[in-house]
Structures are given as C-alpha cells and as structure tokens.
Length: 127
Image (cartoon, rainbow, N blue to C red; front, side):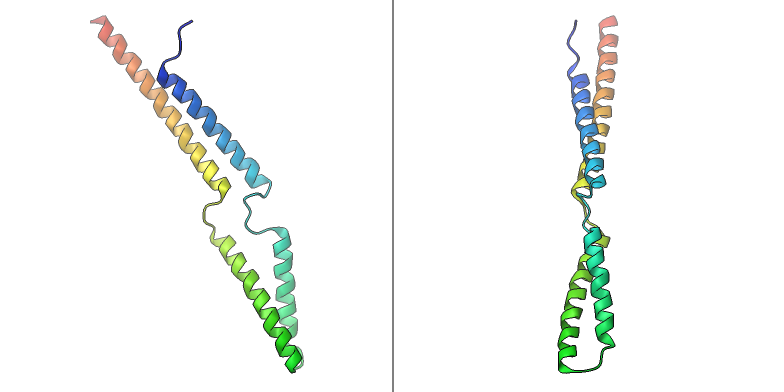
C-alpha cells in the first residue's frame, strides 16, 4: 500500500486539528467557560441596582449618604463589568472556533495543492 502524499497527510492533520478546535470551542462556550458575565453576576447586578435605587430615595442623613456612596461604587463596578462583557473582545472559545476554521481552510488548500501536483506529475509523465 503506497504512503499518502505529504499534502494529503497535511490536509488530514489540519482537518482533524481544525475539527477538534471547533468542537472544543463549542463545548467551552456551551459550558459557560467563555462567558464573561455569569448568572450569579447578573443577580448581583440586579441586587446592586435595587439597593442603589432604594437608598437614592431614603431619607437624607449622614449614614444614608455613606450607604448610598458605597452602593453607587458597587453598582458602578458591576456595571463596568457588564459593559466590558457586552463589548466582547475575543474569548478563548472564539479563538478556538475561528482558529479551527482557519485550520480547516488550510486543510482544503493542502488537499487542493496535492491534487494539482498529482495532476501536474501525471501530465509530465505522459510526455
């Protein structure tokens, strides 16, 4: 049995790696591993917003102003985290997914290159 051409072998390796990376990205995003904003953080954010609202309408006193400042700081921190999660950036799952796609495209190019070389070699041997 003849050995596969190097381009065919490269295509198979790239295809396998690409499919594996894409599957890993889907598993990671499905498990919440890539999620920058969790349900627990959402609950904290809602509670902080509720507390801030409640304190904003509380009777004015030194104690209530101090509590309001702390609640505002907590809310601002959580809001900043939410905004950062919404604005995205590249998560590990995104990198795996698009990297896997690039590997699969590379597999197609390697396979096409191998077929073209085989045709060129056959044509050269016929002469």
